[in-house]
Amino acid sequence: MPTVTIQLPIYNERHVVERLIAACAQLDYPRHKLQIQVLDDSDDSTTALVQRIVHHWQQRGLEIEVIRRAQRAGFKAGALAGALPTATGEYIAIFDADFVPPSLFLQHTLPHFLTSGNASLGFVQARWGHLNQDYSLLTRCQALALDGHFVVEQTGRMAAGYPFGFNGSAGIWRRACIEDPSVGGWQADTLCEDLDLSYRAHLAGWRGLFLGDLEVPGEIPVQLLAFKRQQFRWAKGSVQTLRKLAGRVVHH
Image (cartoon, one colour):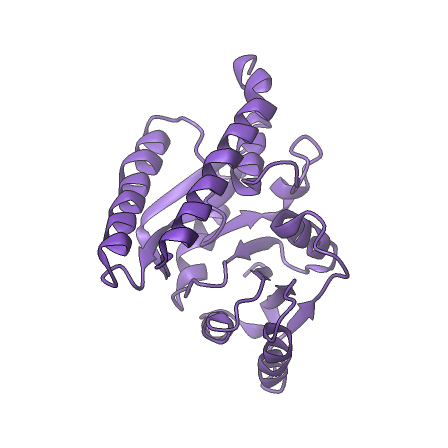
């Protein structure tokens, strides 16, 4: 079995971080092959809570560490890139704070990388589920839109052989793909570092795989303002990525 590092980028997530770490700690995988990095950029009480949670799991034999930075340079992309040199895994799984990976996540994703003929497989993306879709009309509408994205767009693009994006969470990367000089690793010059990296990987000859039958549940924003901010960030980041890579895509 290959070594795996799980990276958990955290920023002021005190209400959900314990649930996330517990789920990752209980993944069905040999502990001597598993490393968890909690990338904590928090500036509130989350920091002390994370330290206590990590200590709890360290006492139970889990290889887990907290990585903190003096400044949040590059935000999520900066945190992921900064932690990679100390990662021990051949494969890098990433979960945002409000996700709860199922215990068999690695059992369902890793075999695809190891199958003969899949040496160019750079990442595997799972389908997002929704822990709180019935909270309100807003969350139900978001769940419907996200389901459409995964079931129609991601599935359709993959079936047609077109590039598609890594969704930033609930996925796993081949480390060699991220570190491929022709890919260029995590970069912080767009708000959609996940989309940016996945398209640069496609342009460099790597490919992705979407698993529609593997669901990783997460929480949907329940407040309208948080939803609007999320949509603005995704929209702006997509435009930034288009501007950044359009020339390379056209000539590819």
